Length: 311
Image 1 (tube, rainbow, N blue to C red):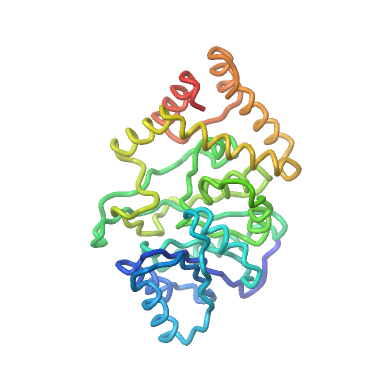
Image 2 (cartoon, one colour; image 1 turned 90 degrees about the vertical axis):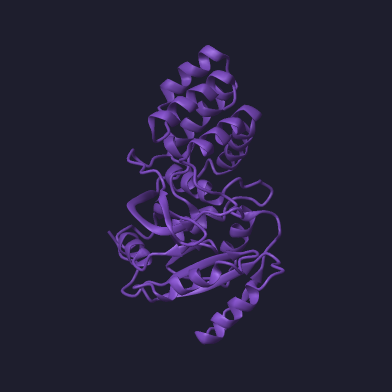
């Protein structure tokens, strides 16, 4: 295995929008990291509260003249993509960050130690479980523990790593930025999981919860392991949203077919075929494909969606 260098650097990519209530705790968690060779890059999506004032005070306190970029105002996934593609940003590794979480002090260190062991020319992404907290930073639970392999056949139908936990190498970033702007990105982190696993890269899921993931009314995406969340997901399936998301993801994967491994591109073609097939063939092809979600209940939901033609 080839190490990147003796002193790797991490670019923290923070997207903000009306984050005045919680952003200070997240900024403080950056300075508390045991890994110190990081640089902070921020994109604000036209906040009209005190978010920018808090950021500027943080910059002054830390003698940081880092540029604050302006977001595209077209959703969180597009916002993260626009920040990730800035050519002035250059590091060995890249860490996406939400504005309202709190990082555990060893988060970057654990990610860097694993990423340094990966070949420089192979896409790699580190992610982890999260600790769920309420508005007052009180623990209310943990994200699901995903124990099955983190493969492309899982990534096609499920994202296991939240973007707020992801740290990835330059090769993964380059691959991610090959996505054409004409495509709608449903979820930047789900897409990263699909691309890295689909193109022969490595995905590592740390069982330790390295991020305190705050749950509140303004979350773009919240916890997904409650019965209420499961009910909401099932309703989205019935309304066809899940099928729409899959259609958008397939379009992007087709555009990257030259980057996908032959085996994984074959899986994409089978996935496309089964979504368009009759009931009996859908179920048969789903079993044959080996496509899976991480838990028993989630797999039951997957087959229900196949039965209803909502894949």
